Length: 256
Image (cartoon, rainbow, N blue to C red; front, side):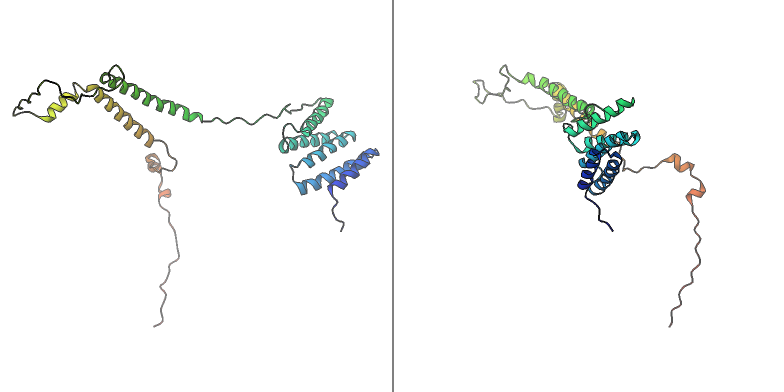
């Protein structure tokens, strides 16, 4: 059984046949070299693309335009896949395919420069709107808090603190409270009169937190299981009960 020949020796023999004008032998040898290279190197190797490009030239000279076009297109496809866009062979294979199609009035359907892959956005579009809405809430809260705190700041932007130095005036002893005095009622009066604005801000913050928590837990989940009453009502008897017939079994007798 003859041993398989090396692709390099086959290609050299094809070059010698082409130089001698024997293009039929050159085509046969190049086809053999392409089969060996595809089997040993893989279908996307640059050497296979070079052999297919030469085979296309020889097929064109042998008046075999169908196989020539197929070889040119395969060579260009392999070159654009296996090599960098600025590699010389990519331009060569593209130019050979263009010249072949232009001579026969066919469409090339080959871009002048391989298009770069689309740039993936840093953030998916579906996340932009929720983040914008989520950022608007804290911004509004911050403005409301600063507006509420502003009356308690002095002209220097610092909070006014009571002076630790006692004044000359003598502190008055608080008057005794009446019998019906209520701390809860007094606390409510202060909250809804002197501190009503900060109290409303705290209420809005808690309301937003509740709504956000509900919105996060009510999102659609694929792994959740729930009942469908419409399908349960529309089910038929044959779908509810399945009768399985099994042969009766007799209890095994144990030898005493």
